[in-house]
Length: 377
Image (cartoon, rainbow, N blue to C red; front, side, top):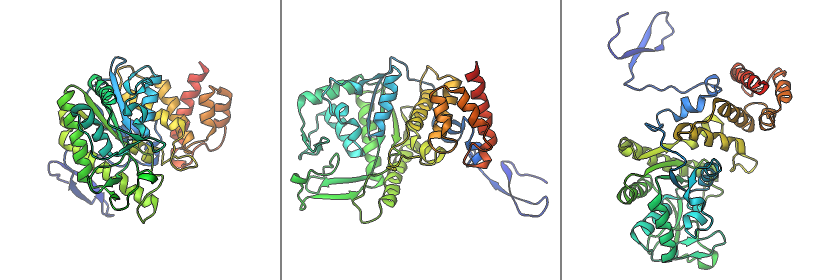
């Protein structure tokens, strides 16, 4: 059968030897099946693909600022424990990006920190409040501490969490969180779901401010997989969360398509790893992730971004432990990995079934055999 250039066999009609053909363009990336997603390199091959940097830029000397939603704290804690230079782990600093950095959950408040630090912008109302609803003002000393952190930063890791906001209708200012009960004024304090364009504008403004004041710094954006604890919309929290995440994900994607080729703005797909690799493996509260899943995502971040590479054994151990913690394979695998218990691993492997999905059984058993050989050395 003659084929035109750039066409491929795609869909069988049911008649032997008869195909429909479709033009597919330069890039065709298929959705993986369960067996493919059971491979130890699945997250790298099927999720991270296309989002890798041109070269690994993170070294122990790289000065990193990470803040945004609570997922940012996981990034900071992991990298700090691995002896990377995390400026926002300075417990002696009073900068809000240190004290409450993981509580800045929307793009408006993250933008406010950059506008305040870099250009001295102040806001008309008290928009910033701590965990106990205490007011945080626009103290010049704290601004200078924030500016000092930002001015040293080589890599900003910004984690965006939600697109629902409380705001002051008079000034337009957006709050970090909601409004303290004793300060709430129903005539001016309102709630709304922000748009893709608004969030896109905020993130672009952040990008422009960093490029202006720290022109060589890189920016990694990520979308927190942690869902809303509650919505103030008159709909279910689950459906509201889908919209909240989608708004931010579209805004980030549009900016990556517009600015990504410049080499300064990047995206790390933690949200997709949690949702599609591990199938939303939340704890009983349906908000927090098992430690092993978080550790694997951070180890994968190192593999993609850091000059010092994790070993193949480290990656395999973290992958299998995360699969176990997510309920995709026997939970006893996590214990065997954590305690380096070869006897327990062998007992798991002696079982007739070790995986949730039969399609993944062979692939997972191959990986368990690899781990068994490593543990036996």
